[in-house]
Image (cartoon, rainbow, N blue to C red; front, side, top):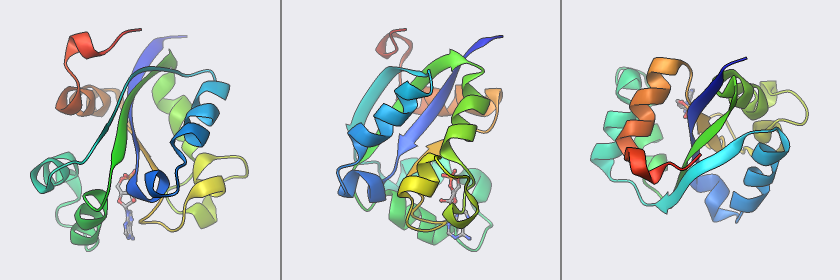
Length: 140
Ligand code: CMP
């Protein structure tokens, strides 16, 4: 199996409830390593660039407002098939559809305030990591 890196965001609804450690415990329990991490307030420009693929969606404005409403924790996770493994651990976008034991089932408040983001593919992961981390910020 391939060792991969994926990009993760612990979103404002989770940081507001002081859940960074609880989410990180689930990540580490799933066998993923947190190889870079920082707590930041992202700018409107950063949020719009990050979610550019959703620009035409009806929820785009709401999504950007939410992502800049409070601190987020951006992370790089490393492990075997990390991209798929983290998507499995997060669960479905809508917590009502998420499987038991997933981060979103346990913590998410709604489809918008859904606690975590994870990259959906290898090319996206590379782009998303590069938006927030320089190569020497990541220590595996
Ligand atoms: P994320 O994995 O960060 O990628 C895009 C985000 O858009 C998604 O998680 C949700 O938080 C958000 N999103 C998707 N659908 C909706 C929706 N119907 N209403 C509000 N936000 C949504």
